[in-house]
Amino acid sequence: MPDFLKAPFANGPEVAPVDVLVRLVFALLLGGGVAGIYRCTRKSAEISSSFPVTLVLLSVLIAMVTQVIGDNVARAFSLVGALSIVRFRTVVRDTQDTAYVIFAVVVGMAVGARNLWVGFIGIGVVGLAGWLMMARAQVFSAAQPAFLLSLRVALGLDLDKLLGGTFDLHLQERELMSVSTAKQGVSLDVTYETRLNPDRSADELVKALNRLEGVQSVKLQRRDFERD
Image (cartoon, rainbow, N blue to C red; front, side, top):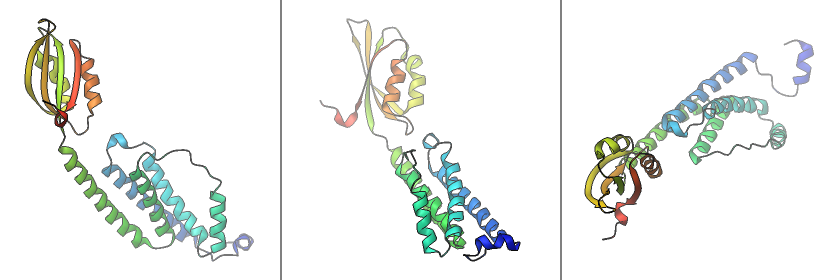
């Protein structure tokens, strides 16, 4: 570095530009690992398009900040004061998202402080933990509660043709429990015992059934709340 450029930076230890570049590249790679783990352990419907990119950038920025601070306590307090004026208005929707933000920050700090093994081991351990938690959630979500689905439909309609497509989309399983006439024989009351698909909700099923022509009313009730 030319002498006239060294003077402004004489207060701290000089770091070779190549070393800075290498650390930032490692921060980029490990931040990509954090974003990859996030994508693999979260449902696609829950992922904001910008959040994984934010995790990568956060790792790189924290690595830069860690190198700027170094061992200078005064510089660290100055940086905290400068960053305190920044206001972030985006609310993190899930506590797991907050954990991944902290994950990206710690990885960036590890790279900036030249503790690469902390970052690599952390990627492995957190990735394993995220995968185990996701597998556990899938096991529990597979055991869906039973619902009683009561429908009133117009007489003369083929129930399988009318309801089959919607049932296949929203229900894990279904069993016809009873069929009876209503409104002096012009309608049918049909009751099924059902279980929802893990990625579907009760209100989605009710709305989808209400949109079908010929369906007059829909009632969905938890099986364990049934009263004889």
